[in-house]
Length: 250
Image (cartoon, rainbow, N blue to C red; front, side, top):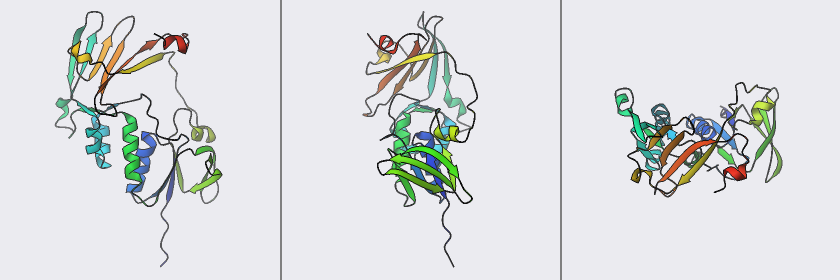
């Protein structure tokens, strides 16, 4: 009897969404190819708060222990009045303990999830991971979907049964398929700083804090950092028309 060939999936994008999708495919006995334009996982400041429902998914992937170890467990989050430094409300995720095995959030930077997912994905013989491989176009014929790429080996074509586009808001895949990106872009800009200063020495705050202010709101979170020593990340608004070099100056 002829052995049936495993269906192959192409995943475009090696961020957390693409890597999680690829790992889920591999764990379900599907061959998978990951195509990422950059040379490594993007480790710039991005999302770090992971809620219970997502923790349950990470648990199903077999990554939850490492994910928690590389982050900070945050049971509470606070709302503050910034002008008076008054805590307005405290929310306790432990109220969800009857609904989930993870009644808390975990502050783990998203690049860590992508990297640990890739490490697990590399254990599968039918997983092919390509960095510095930019998808330039996508098409299909009667038997496959074909992704054309530019990378270290020049121009290549990858064929698969299905393709998942996880290449972000400026998605090449979405544009190639002429899929509208519906919605509205709010006229807002943000500044994000990550520092070693311990804000809990200045304020009785928890790991997740939201400060209301009619002039300048602030979000303040603690993350583990790559070295596990802890960092505080502050996010607040910037002027819409302010030049980047001025906004980032002292």
